[in-house]
Length: 373
Ligand SMILES: NC(=O)c1ccc[n+]([C@@H]2O[C@H](COP(=O)([O-])OP(=O)(O)OC[C@H]3O[C@@H](n4cnc5c(N)ncnc54)[C@H](O)[C@@H]3O)[C@@H](O)[C@H]2O)c1
Ligand SMILES: [Zn+2]
Ligand SMILES: [Zn+2]
Image (cartoon, rainbow, N blue to C red; front, side, top):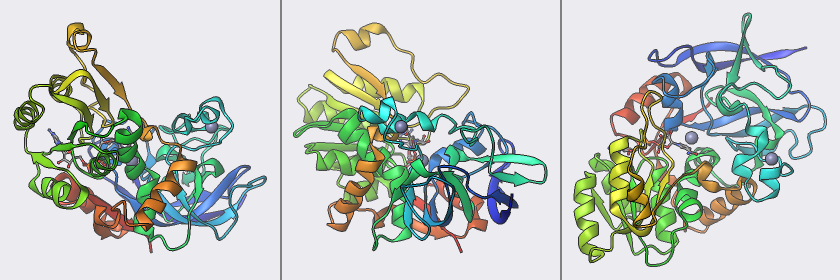
């Protein structure tokens, strides 16, 4: 079998950051395509890997928000052809399995190996000497090239800038869909969004577009609050849950919020409890952000749900159907109704990936994006 060399950022163990290496990358096999990445978003989920909070097989090639050009295809690929522009859906969408055929492409069975990057035939495409490596979410966009499943390839229209296109592979639909699909925000609602970063900024936009009266952001970072209110459509922003709670009590005449949506970098028990307390009768808490592996994020009395008939539920990929939602969101962007350029605070080279994650931790970026050379 022939292979190519690709420069990539890998994580070998927790708390050691990203290591830049040259890997060997196999040719694509049946139903697989090899992508030359143009851009990769720096989602917080990759940071969970290096912080030891993502249960992934190591070493792993980072990156799951990728966009690029199909370089070659394996046998029996029908969705795309060499030269096509694509967005990588971080969960594949085969269109035919039980979840896909019932409108839940975000739970496609082909996404089974997200945490290992192993392909469904039990093998890996990245190699470093004798070592096999998977790409995070079987993508691995912190690499110049990767092999992905054809089911993860979403055709991309011309005219969409690469740094925007890659974000529609995770952060944009995850955030937007958390509000519009998973929560089901309705006209006139009061919605509280915890964490207005790369995902949360899109939850803000989704909630506003769905007609929420109050879109209230909680974020400790002033820059994020400013962006939320001045750019993405939040009506109010507070540094703490306590301040937001007081405002919600006042503005709803004590009825409390219809929705709390949790999109912070790390979900904590304190935050879940604050979110439950902030939602009123029939209210709903939607959890999109990930917590620490070593801590439980939910611990509350049954009565906190029963008395007010509150719901708490998780959301994966914002309940989106990538084959439907990715083009739809990009059309909204092209029509000026969804702000995506504004998500990209700064672009980086692949070799600057550790600096980029430091900038995220320092609160400097809504999204950093790697532009591949
Ligand atoms: N469920 C999914 O499908 C899915 C997909 C993508 C990302 N995620 C997860 O969503 C979360 C958000 O990802 P992101 O890329 O937007 O991260 P991010 O770092 O860009 O944004 C997180 C935001 O939370 C804010 N924050 C920090 N502490 C806070 C607190 N105590 N209260 C409120 N806000 C606080 C930060 O200032 C930041 O603005 C991560 O946990 C990520 O792993 C989940
Ligand atoms: Zn992501
Ligand atoms: Zn499927």
